[in-house]
Image 1: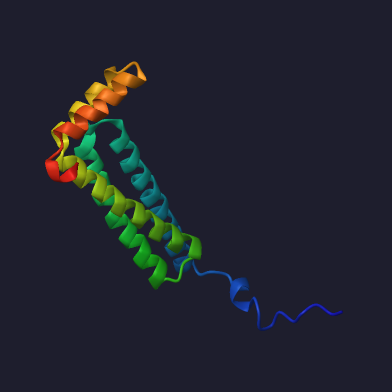
Image 2: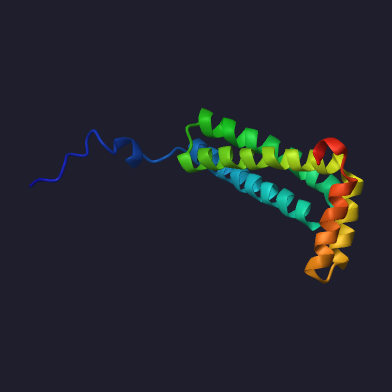
Length: 143
C-alpha cells in the first residue's frame, strides 16, 4: 500500500515560521510561563501566613492580568491548545484565589488568631479546640 500524499495534509505544519511568528511564539510562551509561576506563587504565599495576605492579593491581581493577556494572545494568534487550556485553567485557579483572599481579608483577625492557635497546638485535641474557637468567633450567619 502506498503512503498517503502529503500535498494537502501537513503542508501548513511543514512551512517554516517567519522570524516575527517565532518571536511571537516565544513571547507567548514566556508570558504563559510567567503566568503559571505567578499563579502558583500566589497560592503558596497564601498558604504561608495570613500576614502575607497583601502579597498574595498583589500576585493574584498580577496573575489575572497575565492570564487575560495570555488568553487573548492564544486566541488571536491561534497558539497551541495547551497554552489556551493552561490559560483557562490558570484563570479559574486565580478566580478561586480571589475568593480566598477576599474571604481571608474579611475575617482577617479570626484567621490570624486561628493560625496562631494552630501553630501552638501539639495534639489533635488542641487543634480541635482551635477550630472550635474559630467557629465561635465567626458571625452567627456563617455558623
